[in-house]
Image (tube, rainbow, N blue to C red; front, top):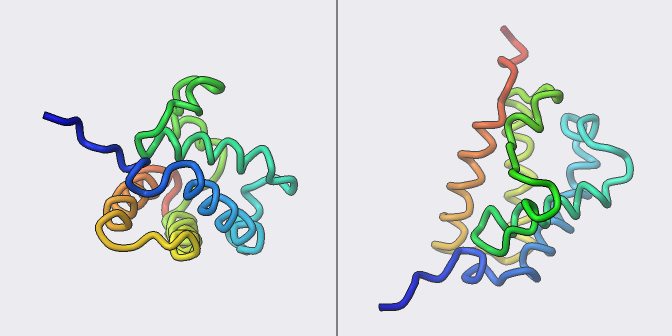
Length: 129
């Protein structure tokens, strides 16, 4: 009996992760809601995201090897993340997945994980409360 192939491999591995990250972060820098949450020099953030997404989708544990356990929610607590921020993040990620030609069941599986994580990162109530 063979082991199931990780989403990371099915999606195309490192070249696909790099396409996603390289498409996503220039959009984030232009997004009026998200840009203030990120440093002006985005290179280190992009590398961290590449390492994280590799591990997140079942590839080698590149993020943990350098930074330890991801502890996503704890690491993002200093930043005000509202439902609008999560929606903006997902909107930009949606375009990045398009740019990386992610389609079909693989995209659905990725989107499910990304959507769940974006919702989990919300740490402030909606602005209108």
